[in-house]
Image (cartoon, rainbow, N blue to C red; front, side, top):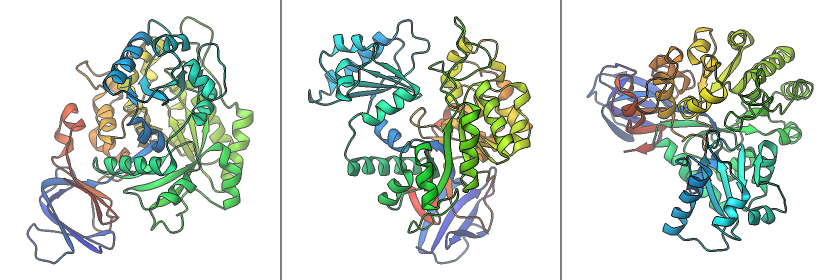
Amino acid sequence: MDDLLLRRVRPGLGGELADVRVNDGRVTAITEPGSAGFAARVVDGHGGTLLPGLVDAHVHLVQWATSRRRIPLDAARSAGEAIELLLAHLLATPARQTELVVGAGFRDALWPDRPHKDLLQRALPGRAVALFSADLHTLWLSPAALKLIGRDHPTGVLLENDCMSATAQLPTAAIDVQDQWVAEAVAAAAARGVTQIVDYEYADTVADWTRRGAPAARISCVIARFLLDQTIERGHRTGDVLPGSDGLLTVGPFKLFVDGSLNTRTAYCHDPYPGGDSPGLLELPPAELVPLMERAFSHGLLPAVHAIGDHANTIALDAFEEVGCPGRIEHAQLLSASDVERFAELGVIAAVQPAHQPDDRDVADRHWHGRTSRAFPYRSLLESGARLEFGSDAPVAPLDPWDGIASAVFRTDDDRPAWHPEESIPFPDALAASSGGRRGVSVGDVADLMVTAADPSTLSAADLRALPVTATILGGHVTHQS
């Protein structure tokens, strides 16, 4: 399909009613409504707002696609409640006794009790049970699940590297089934206006996406640490378009971890967590981080460095300064005041996930007590000149950029007052951070677009999160129409 006519849309926030023509994947004309002209396809926007398509800059796509089929445990307020939710779900939807029982979404940082393999054994004797925390940095396994992957562990609660390696050993659905789940997840994202996803799955994303074929969104394939040598041998560089993908698949950045997460108290901080001496976990000290970044950058791969705690962010910024390369810091949840301006100075993108702020506010108040004025500091970063790019980190949060935009603007997702409202940002800046930096629609733009049912800049937080998307267009092709 080479041409498309969008009738009765309002280009940009507060835009006037117009017709918009798309040819060969680009916006070619914005005219008065009702202008004559033939198009191979006509989409009626019903007076909705035409905006750039949304970009989710941090997704674990296979895990997100899979988590949509896991038992939800996000409502659990204790280990005991998590098991009650698990049992209630199994009672309502009984599974074969031989199946691995998988749940996801628990947050144990504020629980009065602790998860343990014995709790799962008592509730489901002999059953293989694997429960993933919301941040994916903790895996709670039953004795049978530990045996299934050939491991023993005193508590069955695996953190960080142990969690990641055990996750890779657990049984999974067949590849063709996973691919179908991923395709459905991407189509669901398109229904929320998403036209591009950066896939941080800890796998050979280049090979996986080459196998899957044309997706309903542009995919940037992030390179995992264990694939650095292979990626260099392939000659892939960040930004390269993968052959045979019609421009939809590109090589992404090179991912490295400096620390863990807030909910597991493994985010690496300058100060210890309350009630102990531990400041968190340093996954990759500077002596290892810098050479990896240098080698990647010398072969055209831009680093994307996971850093959540303030000390981890200092280490990551120091490494970018020493290597002298641009790149991204993923998460940047807690920053030292002296580090805020360094993002812009060093040309490092602050790739943040605003939906984590309301999710983690209570945990931050307890475990980062006295430091939360420096947590999720989006306005401070923006005012310093840093480039913000928003992602969801799905399945840690749902793959829905509207949730992140609302969180960045309103700093709450319930009926409580905004948390540190001084760090909220204006809606146009939040939209740009979710649209690859684009702020409107002009002639000549790539036709990655969406039509929303209302002007989102006029909506409340609740209405913004529920905003209907009338149509999504990817390179001039309609990927969603309500």
